[in-house]
Amino acid sequence: MFLAAGLVAGPLVLGVDRLDAATVRGIASATLFAVLFTDGQRAPLSVLRSRWREPTRALLIAMPLTFVLVGGLAHLLLGLDWTTSLLLGAVLAPTDPVFAAALVGRDDVPARLRSLLNIESGLNDGLALPVVLVLIGILGGRPDGESTELGPLLLEVLIGLVLGIGFPLIGAALLRLPVIGIEPRLGPLGPLAVAVLLFAACQATHANLYIAAFAAGITLSTVSPRGSDAFAHVGELTSELAKSFALLAFGTLVTAALLGQIGIAGWALAALALALGRPLPIMIALLGSRLDTRQRLAAAWFGPKGFASVVYALIVLESGIPDAEYVFVLIVATVTVSITLHSATDVAVAGTLGESPDDRGEPDR
Image (cartoon, rainbow, N blue to C red; front, top):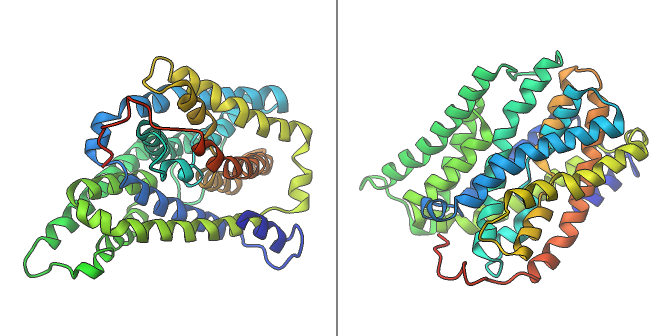
């Protein structure tokens, strides 16, 4: 509904307003940070220790396969050169935690499946960014404010991890001091302050924002479960408001001229990226896992493309590489279809799932 409102308000229909690409990128990036910080708190170390196998398979096997498969489809269907095709695959490889929320946030969905989707989507956004930037550099692009060399990019991931772990640890230690403390009714403000300061620190140091956000959520829920619980409701509301506003902003980018550039082959790529690009690799990666067939199918389908892909698409658009605008158009088409299909099917799919014997009795927090 919010996406539709943005499409109607934007130049596609009413022409009320259209935000510039840099503004939409900032909104989408901040939204993704908020969602990852909140979702990370669903995966304290106790959960990671017991449910690391399926997310590891998804990240190490399914994600690279998706990257190559979508790139191969782009090369065959659209005739793009291999580097540009692989760039498109890298932008569309990460899944979005925002549009998997109906599964991740429901207690009646099996815990192992929720953990898989939550941990995978929490980490793959930050892990895809270095690949995207390196490929832009190979194509001769120069994204504003971003390095395209592997060494500095890996350092940014490391700094993001250090900041994401360090800020919650320092915050929790300070709040334990007798002279500081916190009023119980103001409990949500502690994690909120950590998130705001972490965001600013990442911006100042060029740290990987998404790795930092998810690591901070994990650390906070581990060292301060009471503070994390106090923040949970506020965090979810903040994430939902940010998501709604970001969808409105994204909708204003879509114009009739942009849609006219997609073509039949472009829409076919969008459909195949969703129907094959995620499902086939994840089904391969989860062979022999403890998830039953229904859960594996749900995990395969819920590989939505969302704000991470929007942010990376806008980086591509501003990078000056050949075919930058066409790549952006293809990503917008895929994200739009994904938002529509995954948001329309999440509740229905969640309703078909039930706890399996292997999930009962496992720690969730």
